[in-house]
Image (cartoon, rainbow, N blue to C red; front, side, top):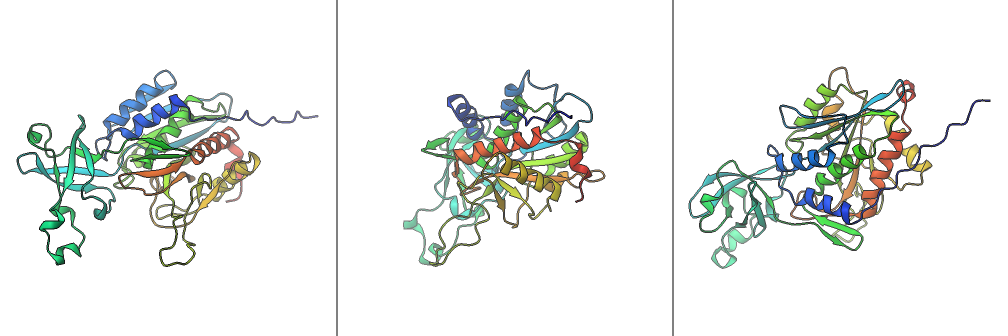
Length: 363
């Protein structure tokens, strides 16, 4: 009689003091697209001694290989982008005042009066505009374009920053009861999860962890990383907008995409990818078997690194899993600690059950 296969040992992630310290380092760091050095260094320091191979490619991706054991192991690429939306200084106008442009998708309505940090030294500044007392009635009806805003670093600021430097919001991580509040939860939650997966990698696969660059400006790093890794399967882990707010016209909001407290969001389709049905079923079956709450991310615009991974070489079956979060691409986002932990739990449990048979199923 054949021996019954035992279920893989369940990984039980937690969010204690040590874990919050790491997440705080990640969210508080400045790593706007094209200058991901600060996050890159944190990732490499955290994974020193855990990887079989770790290198930085020419675009700046951190490519980590954690080899499994046994035969016929699938090569599974799991990607999390390191970059965040933010700003680039483009002109020094003197006296510490700089013209700037946005990097990635940011709503200009949110910018006036926000505190920022600039450059690798985190020089403090403020996004300034004319005070309301100095505006005309017509001006008050209009959204100020970014071209009329400035980052003000104060006297001596011109000696502390220069055109080309990146800037981002100055918000630091806070824990509000069951909720995480920080800038750049998109996608430092994904980076945190991928770090934990490498440290606790299942042995039935070869885990190819790609900490990617320039996702917010076109999924650029993931394309390069996937070509280098040449995986059998691709998974993007990210943060996705939760639109679970009230309908401001007094009607029920049915366009929620995802909502807080609903667990990890499994994608079926977005603006860049139609997820592989075999992988969607594999994630859902795992969530049901392990009693992990989950939700579908309703089809909508936007995309993840999976949008680049699945089109590399001869094609890579791909899927995305995200932590739902409110107020994405703003000075402060919010996500539930339980949603974060359940996302990590689902990813680990699913990877621990993965074998080559999944690619033999009918798509």
